[in-house]
Length: 79
Image (cartoon, rainbow, N blue to C red; front, side):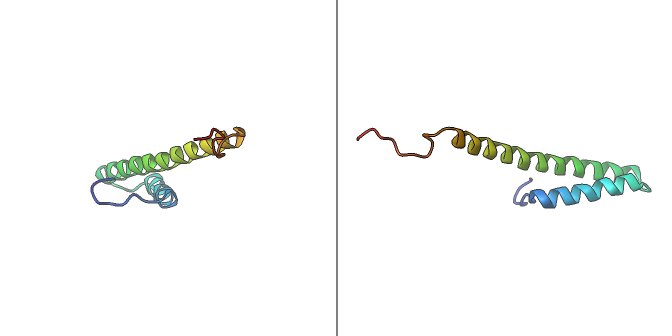
């Protein structure tokens, strides 16, 4: 997100994106309003994708630790 603006949570971004899509599908907007909403929707979709990608990375790391029996154990090598 730009500058000091705090990025929304995944849930906030998804909820706002759903509202943007609903407004676009309802119609009755000017071309300029539609373009502004579409651009906002693209930004929100990118925020959601970033959150999901981060979750995928964390999940993959957790699964790798689970499948590696030595993960998380102290090294048995002295000194």
